[in-house]
Length: 226
Image (cartoon, rainbow, N blue to C red; front, side, top):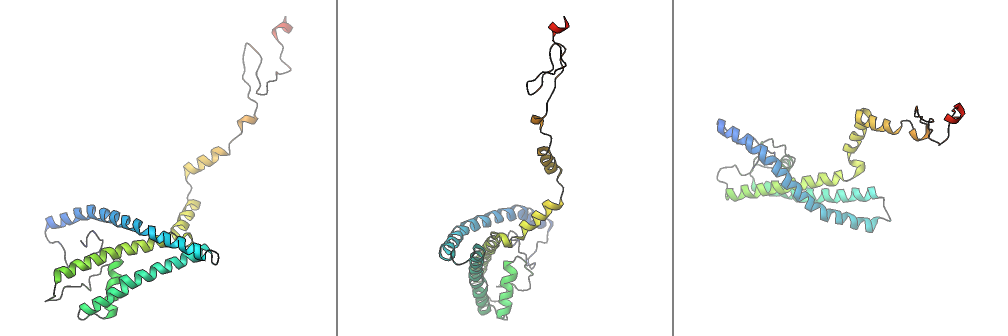
């Protein structure tokens, strides 16, 4: 489970060649599927989040700028995630894990939910742990839901154009990179205006036509040559 969550503590590793090959194949398939599932949950969370943002706009739109309202919305999301997925779980781990201080528990929550996974703190591994299988399943559920919350936070952050630095980097890249296709398309629109030019077509059996319908004065028809 830690493989598909991109969170590897390193205290459980495959030893045989077959186990290593299976781990690689399982990660190649499981990680994209896990990201797809987590993204689907984030899309569901964005529905009430957007409704809350619209409610804030309707209540505070006449007092504050849209950017300030979005910052307040982001701050509310940060407070909810920090309380429910960092402070409260840290207090629980501090209670259940002997030798863990509150700072150690908070450190474990942060390292786990940010997918760093150093492996220096692993809950449920002390000898004589009561209800160890249930405890491990609960921790797995907490980590999965916590990852969804972190992705939701990043999505809300990216929805603010003034804070989305990726847009700025893309804009800078477009200005500094000379795309030949873009230059060709932009150059085609600045070409000569053929509708304003007089195009002559030479002919041996008649007058030379001009785009405005006139006939050259130097032309002499068949009757004049006779």
